[in-house]
Image (cartoon, rainbow over all chains, first blue to last red; front, side, top):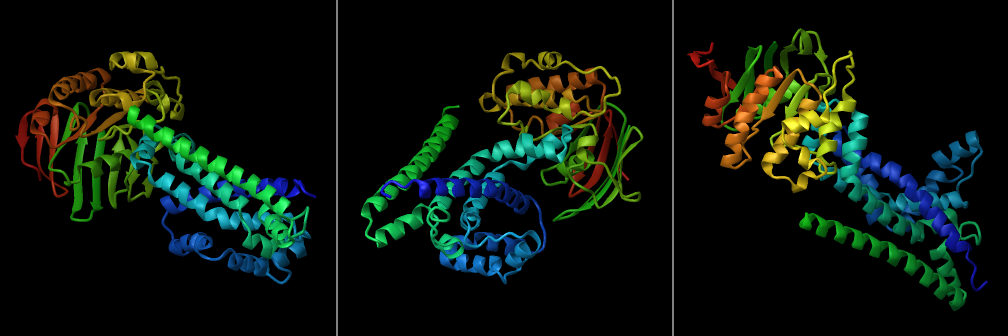
Length: 226
Length: 225
């Protein structure tokens, strides 16, 4: 069991899927709150940002109430779609996605906010539909924010512990991600496994963060040079 | 022929203008904050008036009475923005060609060649450069090329010369006038500069706090009522 790779593979899979979900949801939410006015917008933004300030166990507890047997979503999924979420690896995906959504959302929103609105207006006067404006002007210009959000959201998802433990449990081979495996290996005195996983997750997170810094630095020096 | 009647409540005053032009250059003259840009935006479809009628060659763009508001992309009105609004992630050529694909109205009309338009505006040698590396005058020429490539029926220019140095300004001023004569579509130019007004205007509308206080027509002044 010294080099069981299943937590690593599971963590990467969970982080990838939750990041893709966040890419779609976070980008749409960021665009909508940046460009539209509607009642309850403040409330929505606060709810999206809550996972940043609340302990992950609280988020996990809330998700458990929502997705549990008697929770509104859990009941609906079980009754009509015969899907059970709690204590499956999908629960790990949901926990990771909810906890890392604010990072994706805030980065993408900064990206959208930095765009000169006249550029979008110019595209409209040049005959562009709203969809074309979004894909040829808005999104390419917001790309730095969106990409930074993706990387932050991925590393946060990779490191998620509290909410995952509450919603997905600790089932080796099924819901045991790297952070959970480290905690339980360390508790059980299995230092070898713990150290191995600590090195793996530190290495991945270091690489991504280093890559992000390198990329941001390259972009800013390019702009000065140009 | 462009007919404009616009009323819109702004923060400090109510904008109320009413004018028609058929050809040539109309200058909207006035201090900053007089509502000049809002007039342009209303004609282009970037700002919705509270009340009024905007009509170009019998095509209704906006009518409060008939609840019509044609979206900007369908109006075929060229707009040159004050800071040019060039797409920073596209080359000069990509900028110039951006509007062509959006041009849905394909009634067999001769499509302009990008190379011809770039040649006319003397930006052919810049075609692979990005906007960040261009001078103010070059950016202005690219913005003009981009707007004209869509074959607009009307061209709106918001303070087109304000951000340029004196020498470039004099040069581009002449080119703008010549461009209008060649292109044969009405231009509406917003400015707060008297020299530009005198040089460019075939007609002018003087605005203050959202209201016209004087009109000028081919150097024949008449009071506005």
